Length: 406
Image (cartoon, rainbow, N blue to C red):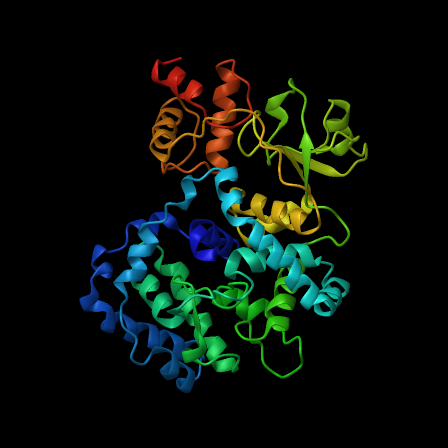
């Protein structure tokens, strides 16, 4: 599943090192042509050898690699980003996936208990990633990872990013965890049951059964424990919540909502926010952000520091909200309240709105038709300026005001 949210995946990878996307976009267009791939690959071979990677690992990983135009085509055609939270979560948190998730937690109960004791991460969170990434190991992908990584490192869009991943994939081969033939996964090079990129595999994979290898493809214990280790290293706090569905009053200072704004939970309680079932919200000091993934008329959540840890795994807001919601459902929570009528705008409308927001000085970055963090922030500021409820969710009302120069 990681390949469906690839844009966010690479935002996650960029946490480990600064990537100049401007320089990537200015790369020589010839890098997309199949004809120069062999010469380019020889340069990678020399760089890997100079970096101290063994000749045997370099030859095993690079010999015979060819360019895969299908991978580049998939990289260019990711339409999932235009989905709303309800569209995405309805599809991903299906009855069948919930049933299978609870079954897998039962089957691996001992492993999950050991992982939580060691890393502090509960079974529901790991199972949610496991389920959305690969349907609990049933669909790890069918693309040879070395070929995918080399193709994307050769391509113009993110060469520095993928070149680093390609070199780390060679280091994985050198370490002996996997052979190149075993490194089969998603089209962008993610590997294993929880879909780690090679750099994450290299740093965070653990040998949980003590057999001397870190095998996240065939060894479920290794895969699940590696997910726990990764989240722990990212800052997961044991025993703390991640996401609660809530009920909000009809009127609220909407400008205070959003992931970039935190208040103690007592603040939201004082404003009349309750738990989803109407019970009182704990009036404590736990930092929390009030999330409205589809605006003030849609579902509402409180997100806690552990939610921000999930965003370090994958920076797609909709994806991570779905992960948190899926984990809650695995623990017995009911289906999310759908709220009132919501007019979810098309990617074309979002792109137009982004152009207009940028033109008015509400900077939202690239007009890509995706409702990301910058678009939500710019939308909120525009709503506040124009006297609209500032919930940060793009609407046709805001679009029409901006079209008319409002």
